[in-house]
Length: 111
Image 1 (cartoon, rainbow, N blue to C red):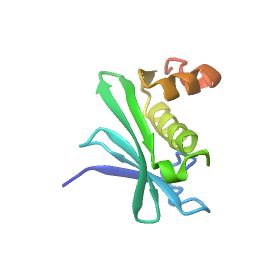
Image 2 (tube, rainbow, N blue to C red):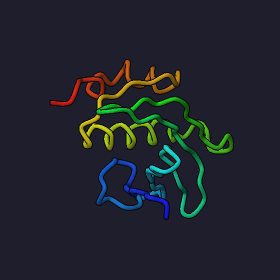
Image 3 (cartoon, rainbow, N blue to C red):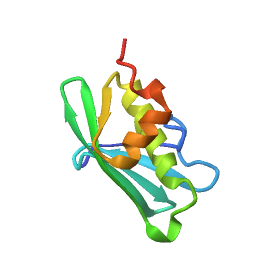
Image 4 (cartoon, rainbow, N blue to C red):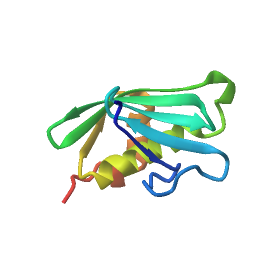
């Protein structure tokens, strides 16, 4: 059975689907956060887990939906979830690297 955590776009595990029909899941078996619009997967962010850290390697959003802020929505949800789990956050993915540069609160080591 695949272990998945599901949460809304705000990264809150209790939030469910947001008001636009988007939801994010963490498919831990596949090591990726997935963005869904209703039942269709429209984006994902791959990661590698290490001891006390998460390293984001790649993000992709359906080209037909680009320009709507979905990559940022997925990134924010994934980073908030990782932070709530006490993980240090790093990235190789250029989009997430840029996001972290403008959101340094996610690069602060966990207490």
